[in-house]
Length: 91
Image 1 (cartoon, rainbow, N blue to C red):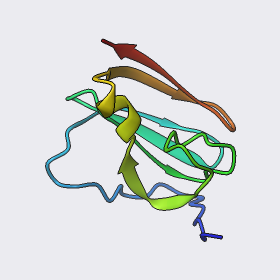
Image 2 (cartoon, rainbow, N blue to C red; image 1 turned 45 degrees about the vertical axis):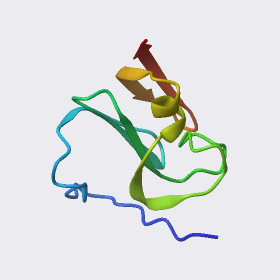
Image 3 (cartoon, rainbow, N blue to C red; image 1 turned 90 degrees about the horizontal axis):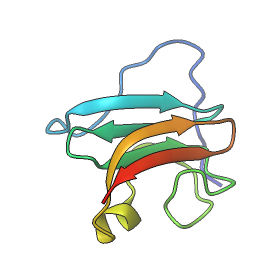
């Protein structure tokens, strides 16, 4: 099982330098961002599949949700709940 660090204080995001973030949302133990290009990146605790990567794997590194890219969907908004992630997409 992956170790997921929990930050009790603000921390800088370690994202690829070419990403322009438009929206951020934090759940209980996971975080999601939407880029200006409409891509969704998630990281943190993934036990219930809330990261959207098709598995229950946790990760400390931000990863793009490839399923949305493969379907040609652009994310407009993201909202994280305690163990869920909700998105609004443009087709």
